[in-house]
Length: 389
Image (tube, rainbow, N blue to C red):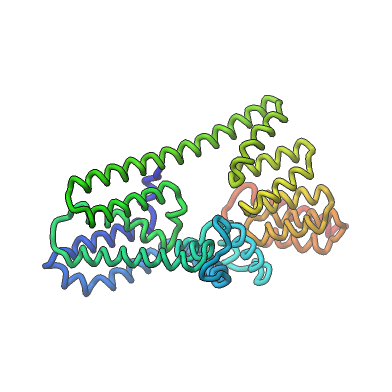
């Protein structure tokens, strides 16, 4: 459930460990006055160090926050775009942004499919309305007040202190990540918060232990339930694939379709179903299913697939729209450029084809792969062929 090496490499987790250490030291009366002077410089220095340690990741965060704030300013206090709608709205905003500003920038090279705002306060405000972001910010302020209470109060490191400290990684993650959108971390955050409340208000240790046990068992039950749902989804996918490989393709499609109707936001299942429908010659159903799934999920690959399908159907306006959207969502993925060039070549628009082949050749490779090199070689050959004719 938790990748321990990855967790230890996380900048947020390391920053949280430093904060936990400082809070623990500030509870010591003989260190409090000295540390109060050094705490701000320590925070500032640590933030700068962690920021420059992964500069590309930090710049990518700035880009996401910039576009997310644009989405946030379009919402009202009481109403947002809707639960789980960030992905669709963000990716289309990103596509519009790069269509306006161009793709020849560091910002465009770093951009990826957007699923979260990498800031829970902004994300909640976008989806549910400003009130949700304000409420979450108020909870964070109460958490800071709880830490101040612990610092002022001299005493042993008790259960209340433990619960408070164990919430710091979640609290920091809310500013630069999306911990509340990860089911296991959300369950952990909620259970630890409830245990903290119980440790504060429970009059006796017996009552506290009883409530803590109930909360712990509930958290474990919710985690097991989520794990079971994930495993059930994997099993459905595996059984459908087995039917497909065995040659019973109609049964495989029916099996997957039944699951997708119950779980319309199951991303890999819905995309695979649309692709199978296309392979079976049910092209209109495939495109309708993919377009219908778009309200739940949007990424570069989905628009690229639709663009390829519309190209095969010679529906040039829709093919152009989908491939351009695919390109501008994540410019560094070179496949969309190649598909655009091929589309314009099929339309006998050689100037446009030449332009996109040249763009493909000149565009920097973000992550060196054999596929990226192959696309650039393909572009060079295609460009020479156009020039020779």
